[in-house]
Image (cartoon, rainbow, N blue to C red; front, side, top):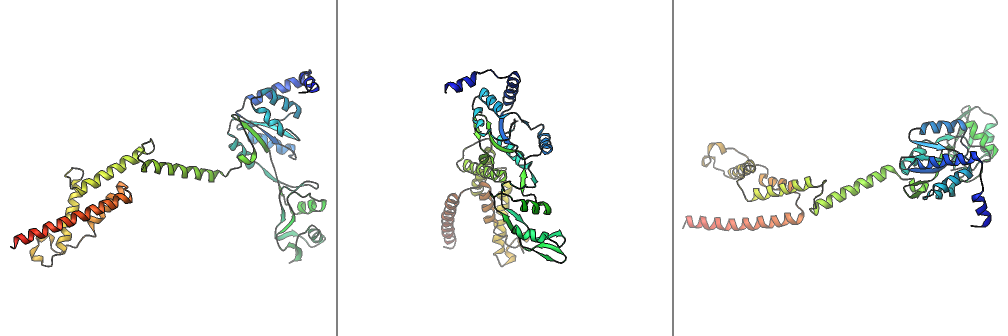
Length: 351
C-alpha cells in the first residue's frame, strides 16, 4: 500500500458517513447470503414495487458506492470480493435463502419494458408477423425504414414476416424506438440484475447460479435411483434399502422352499396349488375318462401353472440372470434323473 493510500484509509470521515458504514456492516452481518445487484434503468416506482415484493425473503439496501466498498472491507471474511462489482448504479441485497433460490426469485421478478433511443439491445429485436392494427399511412414507411417487411393489406398496415430489426449489442435509434413504442413492443426486461453473491465462504457468479431446476432435480433423482439399485445389487444394507433387501431375501427363500417342496405352513397353500395344477395337467393327458376319478373328469390343462409359479417366484426374489440359468440347469438335471428312475421302475413292473 502506498503512503497516499494509507493516508486515505486512516483519514477521518464525517460522522454521518461512519454511521452509514456501520449500518451497512450490520446489514451485511445479518444475512447468510449477500449480493450485489444492478439497478440501472429501473424506474423508482417499479423499484419500490420490487422491494415490496421481496419483503420477507430478501432486503435491498442502497447507498453510495464508496461507503458500500468500505463496509465490505470492514466486514472482511471474503465479503470484500463483492467490491469488484460495485460500479454504476448498484445496491446490496441480503437474504437467508440460498444463492440459487435468490437468483431464481430475481429472474422471475423481471418484467418487460420499452427500450429507449441510445440504449444497447440486450437481445435481437424482432417485429413479429401480423396485423399492426395501425390504419394505412406514413407508418408503413417507418416500418420499412427500420427493416420490417410491411405493406398495406385489408385496410391496415401488416408485417408480412417476422423481421429482425436490430441485433443484440447494437444501439437503438430514434426511429426504431418510436416504431417499437407505436407497436407496444417491450424488448427488454427490467429488474434487479444480480452480479454476484457471497454465501458461506463462496463467491457465486450469475452464470453459476443460472441452472435448470427441473433438469437438476431429475439428475438428482436419477443418481439416487442408481445408488439405490447399486446398494441392493451389492446387498449393502442402508436405511433406504434394507426393506427391499429383506423382501428380496424373502422371495428367494420362498422360491427355494417351493422348489424343495418344504412343508412349511406359509408355503403349504402354494405347494397345494402347485400339486393341484400338476394333477390337472396329468389328468388332461388321459383320454379314457373312465380311468379317472369323477372329480378329475373333463378338466382342462392349466396354463403352464408350474412354469408361471417358477417365474413369479423368480420375479419376487429378483434373482439375476446367472442365478436363473443355474436353477434352470439344476431343474433339467433333476428331471433327467427322475425320468431315468421312472423308466427303470416301469420296466421292473413288467419283467
